[in-house]
Image 1 (cartoon, rainbow, N blue to C red):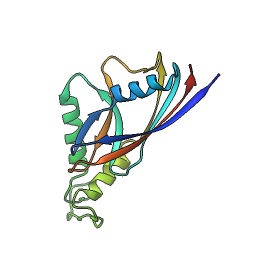
Image 2: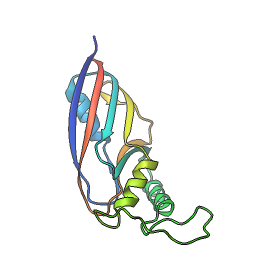
Image 3: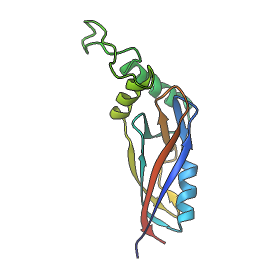
Image 4: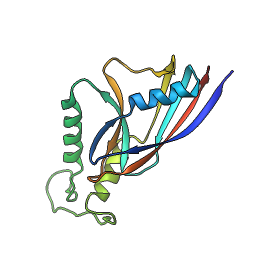
Length: 151
């Protein structure tokens, strides 16, 4: 028989970068009493995102962050050709990193659906689930974790 669990996680970030959520998620799955099923994780913000990536070499995360900063520079946007004037972002209500954070979120992922078995996420040997903070200052982030499965 299938059961479900819906919880909200509060995650404190310390600023731009990656926070490994894997052990926290595994604790929540284990505590639910479910053994096998699907976990849907959703980020309830528009300036951070979720990603599954390598957990063995921190340079992978450094390179990802550098790539996205180059793709979405904080000062504004130029035409893709590189020719033309810089256009500053018009939305900066919460500071100069506001609009770049929204664009970075739109280009990445704000929800993930993952299988779990034995009360743990099914991930590859070198994989982890990360919250990717796109703002420079730390924030208290809310995540929704919906589990559907069998005991």
